[in-house]
Image (cartoon, rainbow, N blue to C red; front, side, top):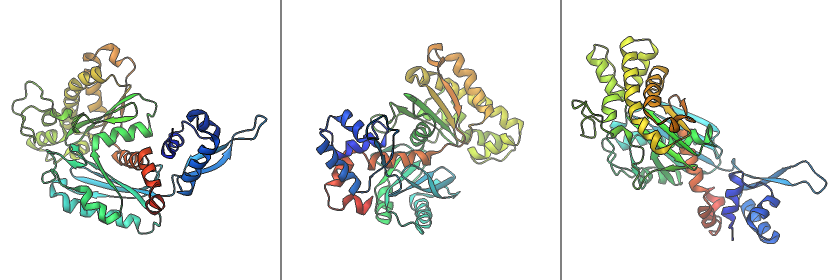
Length: 383
């Protein structure tokens, strides 16, 4: 028998937004349905208002998830930069902070700055924080960063343990490519049954959303294409310790090192992008070649996953690089796998939107809502 949390899920996802539709969808009696909806309304999770045009009977009043009764804190940490946002439960931004921040400085300095930004954003906010979402440029398993090549000192560090006591809300951590993919799916391609988002910045990674859910693999390693080895590059030593990894050959860090050797000092993927935008011929040539190299790997990925949308984001997500990807992808992948494929440029990427979606999906999952409703004032205090 559907619970109150499952009813909220139906309303929140738009599957049923009137009492009649919920009754038809669930088979609940009117009395049981009313009791459970009353629970959700009393907890501040559900609102009712607005009517369909009448067709002769009593017009149906719409139910909606109350996305303004609490707020979410979200942060996106990159190798050389970070940003933070305060949003409502629909992802509408209420405040934003960003700045240069080196992930290699270690977890406590970086998270301390993030916490400072969060406190500034909350200074004039009286609604409770329902959750905190954190995007990081490394693999995540069980909420902790796991052997991250680009994040020295972060392996196994309890990010939740650092932030949760400060903000009194659950902290959810995921890989930046996963959250990029989730954010793109929710904001731009909600009808896509399979979406792949590739982030090409200092490193390279992919996120997969299949059936509306992030696919992470058995321990968070799905989509880690930056460590697929390319033949013919034995000199390219990756930060993971291997030779010939895609990230060590075609990532922004690798291109920055090559430009520096050419007499064009460049420190990161964002620096490479600046040189491309400025029309530096060497940077443009390197971006085109790197795009082809990434396209070789994506041709296989597209044949395996068969996505409807491929989003390329990050510092190198610009026309020269993406032209190189398309050139090789469409030549090497099966025509059946690319005939309905959309290849889109996603700009720098919005992992913040994915972090918010992760928090809302987790905190308001049916089982989580049902547990909270059994605790006196459990939802009204925190949510």
